[in-house]
Length: 273
Image 1: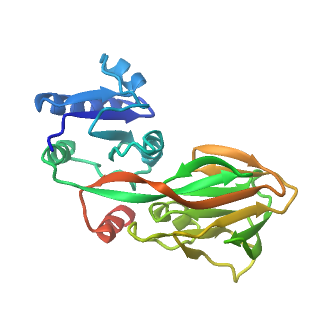
Image 2: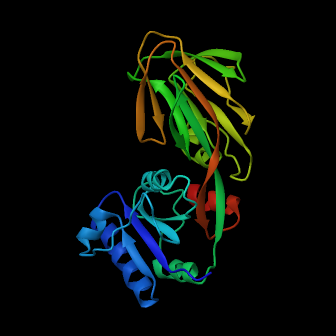
Image 3: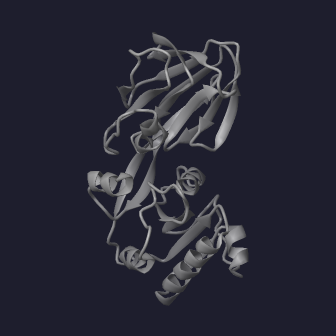
C-alpha cells in the first residue's frame, strides 16, 4: 500500500535534530508524501501541519532523537497500530534503526522495503490501579541512593523470595538490551513470549535473574519503611511505600517497530560491539 503521510516527533530541538527533520521533510515532499510534525517541532520549521497525537492519521511515525524519545513516541501511540521508526540523534540509540545515510533509509521506507516487528509490552499496576504500559522496563528501586531496600517477589500469587537490593527490574525482551543488561540480566530475542525479573545489586550471591513465561502474573512489594520509586520506561515515576504492591502482566497491546536488519543478533553485535 502506498504511503500517503508520515508523522515526525522529537523531544529536543538541537541543530542535529532540526537538520534531520528538514531532510525528512524535503525527501517526502519530493515524493508527494505529506509530513506532519509534533507541534513544537513544526513551529520551529515554520510548518502548520501539526500531528494530532490523539488521532494521528498517518501511515507511520518517525522519532528523531534517542531511545527515550522513541519510547515516549510508542507510549503516545498506544493502541493505535501505527508503526514507529527511530532516527538516532541522541546518545542512547539501540532501538533507533537509522543512524547515518538518512536518505538511503527514507528511500527504503517509500519503497516498502522494511519489516514491522510486533514487540511485547507490559501492563503495570500500583495498589490495584493501572499506571501505565512499558516497552522496555518497569523498575522498582530505592528512592534514596545508597540505601538498600527489602523487596518481596510473588509469581501467580505465590511468594517466591525476599531480597535485599538496590531495586528490581522487570523487563520485556526489548528492554533486555537496556538497563536489565547493565544489571547483569540476559539478552532476550524480541520474538520470545517471555519477560525477565532482574535484581539490581542484590545483597546475596545466590540471587539471579529469572525469565518467566509471558502469561506470568508478577507482584513486587516493598517490605522496608524507606521510600521507594516505581519508574516506567525511564520516564514516569511513582512513589511507593511499605506494603504497596506493584503488579505486572503482559499487555494485550503491542508496539510496532520498523526494522531494516531482519537478524536480531546482527543488530545486537553492531549496536553493542
